[in-house]
Image 1 (cartoon, rainbow, N blue to C red):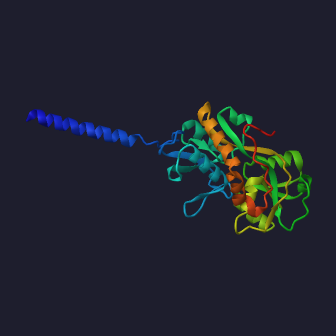
Image 2: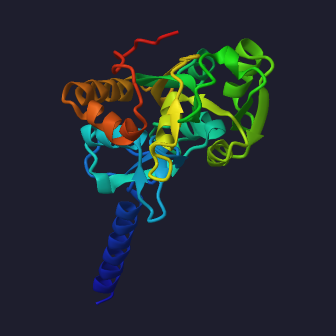
Image 3: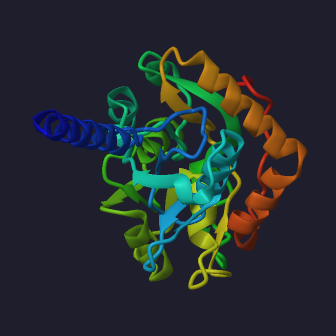
Length: 280
């Protein structure tokens, strides 16, 4: 009888240990690039309409969200397996290095400084710095016309400084906490123009409340190659994402996502860039 009791107890302990192991095996960090039903966490922006936006009902929309979802599907994940995580601009490299996310699709421009810390797949979109003006304003025909104009951007933006230092030194910078505040100021004629990447501007201008009120100038003041950020040295994942991006372009899904997210602003996007083609 004593032997049977010990055996039963041992079995119970073994079963409990196996259960704990199974519960702990789910991937609660960035995820496994092999897919297979596990979860994956992807970094995005949640405050940029048309790019990456979390809606009041908890859904995620935008071009980057569509690109990230397509990539995840090609890696073997269903939509229900994806967790989108906000990654602010200043936190993107840290989130990748720490393993908080598997990869990032968040208007993430490829540049030499960032390549020291992370790798990039892509690029998947060529954007340009531009300005947004009121639809009835024809006074700004070139960047030089921004001299003496009130130019808005978010606090700490390099876009506004680029205009001030290189293109229109007499522009009057107005820095607000967010792009939405700049849009309100532009609509109410408190400022004359808003500057950042044209893709971001198109996303804001495509919102239902703003359609027809604004237009992009089309100045192309810089080249911004958006890439998928991932952990440095993960060549296998980089190749898989590059393959997914190539397929997204070839099957028409890329064009469909561009039109769905930027179409209402009449955004004249560049053709999908070739993988590895960084336009300086």
